[in-house]
Length: 412
Ligand SMILES: Nc1ncnc2c1ncn2[C@@H]1O[C@H](COP(=O)(O)OP(=O)(O)OP(=O)(O)O)[C@@H](O)[C@H]1O
Image (cartoon, rainbow, N blue to C red; front, side, top):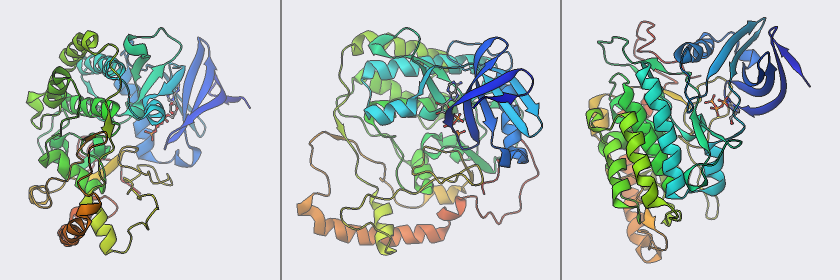
């Protein structure tokens, strides 16, 4: 049923739902649009209202073929809506869920588009801060690009920041989605353009492998891996592409490429990747420390039951907790340096060539079990040491003064 939004727009049909609201296919004075309508029960939530306004502000004047433009912000009674360019297609997460892994040529073409969009945002002084497959839309009505890929557009600048905002103090909260968070964010440094490059390299790795390099398990473990672990090579990946990924996943932000350079280098690789099938990579093993902790607590799934993944902290009150650390924004306290330094190492999920034996195959099970008990104790100690307290639900340190740079929307 059609619904009026302000005096100039009509919403016709739901295109999708996010944690903060619903995106509608709509009509405006200049033709079809997408209308993101804030959930009514959240219209009094100042943080979320702030995100809508922020998205409008960040994108003012930014017109680019690889960025979804925001056309209008409508405030009408209880309705708060962002009017955006309509992208007829799907989001990259949906495509990835359907295909599991993309052929390298298509993956690199999409990443190059997003890098172009980021270059435009960075040139306009905006850092996105939440680059992930959910925030990349694929235009399925336009012409096909290399490897049959659709034009990709970056969207959701709701937590974007102006790069040049001065800041002298260490950040007290982390905003972002754990799987894609650059190490300097975890360490409390201000978000600069390089955080988007790290996140995009993580997305590209995920498109190629079917999983993120440092994801899996408890959000605290994911954060620590970003700081302490090195990325494990993907079997069968062309060396030139791997080197590019490694450079953009560098722990030191200054070592990463700039967005325009990354876009150019990715496009240079396209002829080399033409016709190459998706990489033959098996899913990594589940984080052993995580499993061990669950075993110890009696929470381990019974044989044959799917492994339960812990969710990140939903940004929005009432949102369903996500089933992974990559689906939702999270807001966490920045861990202290000693919290990052301690704890189990080597927990990054190691990719295996398809068919290669799992490290914990049947003949190794007794050894694995003994290791798990040791790890379980380590995991319990870690938890006691405060890793779990990074999560925002309880933060018993006095809150910092409200400051757009340093504070994040409070998790429920
Ligand atoms: N400009 C657009 N044109 C067409 N479809 C869109 C547009 N923007 C969003 N959508 C669709 O609407 C759905 C919800 O988008 P939204 O940005 O609210 O959610 P999200 O990014 O998945 O969630 P969250 O707000 O929690 O980060 C997405 O699945 C996306 O495919």
